[in-house]
Image 1 (cartoon, helix red, strand yellow):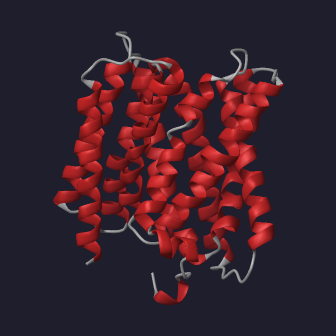
Image 2 (tube, one colour):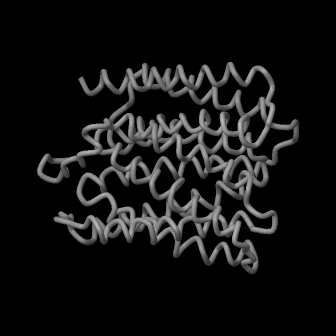
Image 3 (cartoon, one colour):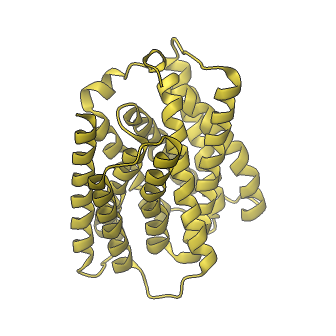
Amino acid sequence: MSASTTAPPAPFSSSFGPVGLVLLAALLWGTTGTAQHFAPANLSPYWVGGLRMAMAALFFIALAAVTDGQNRRPSAPTRWSRLLFCGLCMAVYNLSFFAGVRACGVALGTALAIGSGPIWAGLMQAVVQKRMPSPLWWLGTCTGVSGGVVMALASADAQQLPWLGMALCLLAGMSYAAYALVNQALVLEGQVARVNAWVFGCAALMSLPLAAWLGGPLHISASGWAVVVYLGVVATGVAYLLFSMGLRGMSAATGVALSKAEPITAFALSLLVVGERPAWWAALGLLAVIGGLWIVVKAEREAAA
């Protein structure tokens, strides 16, 4: 991509650093499971996913209205096709993630979905952009993914996993990786808030009808709305704002790999808030996740240098 189409990073982005922005986004994503723990039992996870997309779209629409300035746009056909593709990826990720987690269980389903994302992203970057990540990047990514799986197994009950649920979780990871790869090009060409407003708006329009079909009539209380608003505005809107800003300064594959910091927050909150007590060897997985993240950051710095 030529330098003339690259938007200058925002002041917050340049002062905090791309790696810090993506890690902050991952920490916010890590609160998702704990927030869902407090959702009413009669609130369908499909409705949680659809309403979360709608709340995120409203957040980005409001942000774009406040911060909209000069917005350089590429040619309309290219831009609209990529916006629709990103919206489709986000909708598929959202619904397949919740369906897969329901079939596989929260711990292992999340590990499959989030853990497969960096692998998909590295392969897509190699095929689409002709940029194979370095061996050091693969070492850090595989180390972090392995640590996340260990943490999930330490928290999961022994059960027989259905193949369909596992396939849905892998589809979620692939959809997220494809979103990150294409969204990076969009945020380099246009304003972050406006791009994400279109992406999440498209995702909401695709997700809500499916939520009504799969989740049945919507029954939601005040506490349910509180959970949905938090998930949509903070754990999705603010998190993907930080993630998109971070993608301006790193490869999409590295951005997806750094999202492996999410289990660190989820693990801490499960202990302190939810009161879960996983097996002792979950600490080994936590150390592997931290070590993998450190290796990925080192690989990204070497690539930038």
